[in-house]
Length: 175
Picture 1 (cartoon, rainbow, N blue to C red):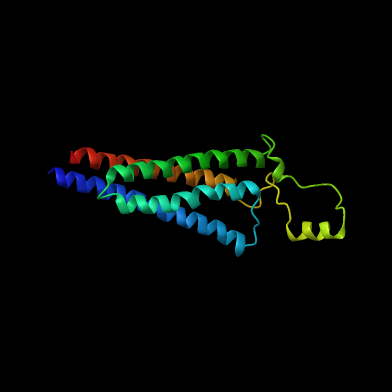
Picture 2: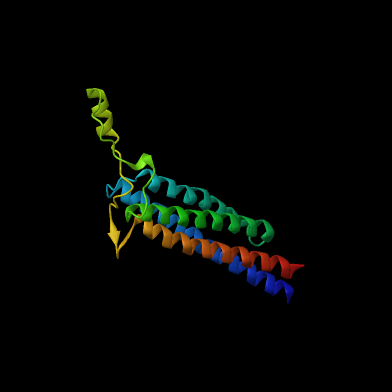
């Protein structure tokens, strides 16, 4: 009976981790699609919000691979991915607040008003435009890319935390 419970919890951790992995992949591919196909240039805060996905995707993959045989390690990895997504939700909320003008954004997100010193500087500005963080490029149902990132990251954090709990339970049922 213990093996059946352990297998059930390991399977649950694997399934939840897989769902989190698929949503993570779909999210980052969607962001890249909007950038490279749709022409929506990301601002510095948008680029920072991608870091959690770049870190969590391989972590989730490894955690899934270890969910059955090494559930304790898988639980730690699922927990790390969950924390990355939770932190990213906070960053997305900050970015959304900048877009709604609740607070100022970082200096790296502001357009420079100074005149270029030379024609070369002007060409460099044209080749690498500053994308402002306080002007959302797109909204759906009132939420910008940053707002949707908050929603998705909260869902991913929940899935990863739940996968971690299932992996821990499979380990405790095994002993």
